[in-house]
Image 1 (cartoon, one colour):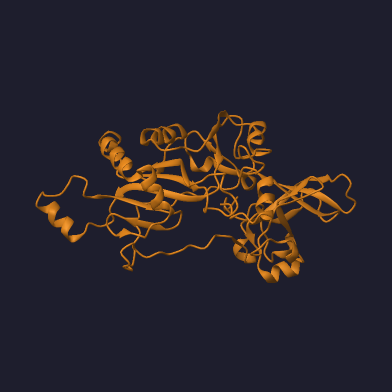
Image 2: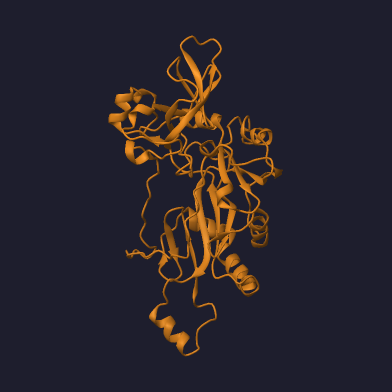
Length: 372
């Protein structure tokens, strides 16, 4: 794959399956994706353009393809189930590209197709002051790993993996990192030897894309990310961890990543909770993702929750499917969103999500907030 996070790329038809009881449609298998199509439209080994779940199709292209009525709100490709068969993507004839492409080429730009991103809300500081907030380059945005259907064959039975439950909420990150720039008064105190030994560092937090505040620049008004700080005492716990381990581990920046979930976070998907909760899933030291065991150990030392670990051991398709399909939130008939599979080393080239197709159907029916 040219771009593992692409939602529109060139692929090849691997298999065509009959749909029992259907005279005019058949199931097309392309890589890890399934699509229901009119019979005799494609043949095995045909090059096709795949637009996957959450691909936003331009209005003109949707009309030309005559698929406008099959898209979900926002002109996005949706997952449906027909006669017991899932259709999870949109197939576009290869002839729609005017340039010769090879399998795996990203066509998002050429066809004007984008990946849906929920809008970001900007909030002023708690004091009411509006500032030009400058992001700290040491506070890295979380790596957006691909859907496993886009990277079929990523894992083999030789890979030792951690499989965790994918929590559907909103991404959160918290860290103690080196300040991008010391304030004038801090520089003066440091020059005269009056500064704390950790004056070069600050606590900082944010959502996936947006910093919500830092010790050096101030904090936004109360939000779910700050509510979680107070609920779990994250700031104090991170400072304590940083001070106790910095010299031993020789790192300058520690950032933890997790998911905030529960009532009010995603529409119609609150896990039956009365208040929001947090579960961590990754740790970076100086921007490098640690192994799965080390990440779990970090959250254990911080006394913070970690996402449910469903399995640790050699990967297999059977084990993957066991935790993907027919998995419901405890005590309900609501499908879990899916799973995340990580190689034990934490290598970002070996991390992917698997979304439960029943969740996608449920989400469409009950207007659940967007998957990510």
